[in-house]
Structures are given as C-alpha cells and as structure tokens.
Length: 370
Image 1 (cartoon, one colour):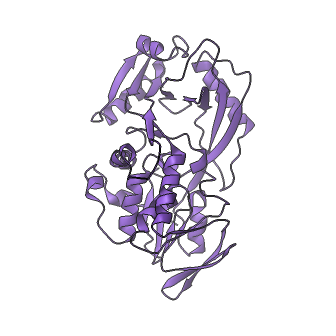
Image 2: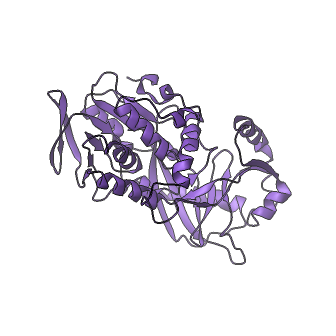
Image 3: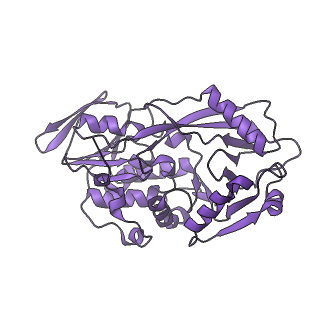
C-alpha cells in the first residue's frame, strides 16, 4: 500500500495502517511536513470548524491527553484558552455561535469589562463580548508529527523522501507509481497529498473533488513594552477577520486570510501582511514597528469544508484523504483511525461514532464532482 504525502494526514494514517499492511510513505520534499503541517500554529478547539470536524476533534482528545507510551517525550497539549471576540455589530454572530455549540463543555460568555481585564492589550471599547473556550489548548505540532513518523517506522513502514509523483498507472489489479526517486508498486493508494491531492487524483484517473488550496499568512511581532502576554488566550475575531496568539515571548498575528492559490510553496504577500497589521492595530493597543518573521501556508478545502475520507467510487483501490483545511492537526488522531478503518474495510471505531460523526459526511460520494 502506498500513502502519498507525509504531512500530518499521511503520517498519521500510515502509522495506523502499518500494523496491518506493508506501507510505503511517499514524500515529494526532502523531509516530511515541509508545507502545511510544518507551518501550522495549531490549536485544539472543540468548537472550531463544522460539525464533523468538531466530532473528530472530540474523539481525538483522549489521544492528545494520553498518547501511547513512547509516542512523545513532551506533552502534546498545553494550556491556552481561546476567546472568540465580537464588536457591537457582531453580537449576532456571537449569539449564532453560542446556539451552535450550546452542548459544548468549557464554554462561557464574557462581557466587555471582564474581557478587557483578561486581555489588557485589547483596545478599550473595541469588543462588546466574547465566547471563552477555557479548554482550548496549544498543540505541539512537531511532537505529534514526529510521534506518528516514529510509530510508522517502528511498525516496519518505509518513507521515501525527494519522491515527487510523476505518473500513476494501472498495473494489473494494482498501481505503478513513477516518482523522481524511482518506481513504486502498490496494491492500493491513499491520496494524502494535501494541496496537490486533486493533481494526484487526476494522475490516477479520478474525477477531482474540487479541492481549493487557500493561502494563510502569519506574522511574528514583539509584545509592546509594559505588557506580559505570555498567558493570554488566543484571541480570534468571531468572523475570522484576524487572530492574535502568544508565541515564545512574542505575538503571532494573522489576518486569517483564505486566498485561493495553486498548489505551491506558499509565500506571504505584502498586501496580506499590511492587512494583518491594520486589523491587529485596530483591535489591540499595538503599533507594529518591526516584523520579526512572516510566512504563509496552504489550507485546502472542498466546498463544504469537511474532510474527504473514502474510496473513489469510480477508481478501484484509490482512497482520498484530503481537504482537512485548517483543522487537520486537531482532528488527526481520530481522522487517521477512521480513515485506516475505511481503507481496510472495517467499521469506523465506536468511540468516534459516539461523538456523533456520520461517516457519510466524509465520503467523496457526497460531493458534486465533474
């Protein structure tokens, strides 16, 4: 079996599959996680994303909180908290989210004065209210990714780096995959190629799933003198116009942009950086004089922003695992177990179903393709 793409999606599903099958993990770059996985400022949030993502995130919590022995020498999660803030004219959006997540735990509403005490850097009078998710936590993305890669190797899995896929052809009942590192034969393919997933699908003769890679920009700036932001929660605009997050003694800020892009090594656009600074300066008592670092990554979505996990209905032996968008890290443990079960023709794990996940919501059959 071949898994194409060694980011978090490919690494995690390969690790889950390797105990039951001979698996080769194909990565186009010199090292796994170069693109989206390696550029993620991930947060574990049970209220972030559409309903299937929230279900997968809840089902992933036990893994994050108690990973297998030897998986990681450091905790995968650390305390953070999240504030979804809204201006006066955004109170309707606050109310709509409160209604949507009414059954979620660890959630409370915070009004203006309490909000300004929680985040002194917030400009006075800017935000009218917020939803506070007390259980939101930072994810150690590197530890999670490397843990899965170690688990994969220890189960006998093989990783081939610097192996850009050049062509995919039928070879009897299986596949012949031509790569820049040589030819690989496989009985089946798991397409976890991130922003390149539709291109890989087309090589295999599958109809595209309508994947749209979208660029997101991140900028690192210093904390203003006189403020200690180390313990701030991440602060996110309720309509995702920006976010601000403490990061190793500095601040990571973003305009939360979703600019369509071809699959590529994404780079920050100066206009997006300027928009980011403008939005942050309006919301916070912050004047950006110097940018310490900036980067961009691609988050890939299909139309309903729900991941695609399932065999292609028209191309036997070709399994889609794509479209995780901005939720791929926080949902990885449960999505990997779910995808591995589907690949092997087994029932979806009961604990995932217990979180009210409908497996049909992940199937490529749900999509209008053509």
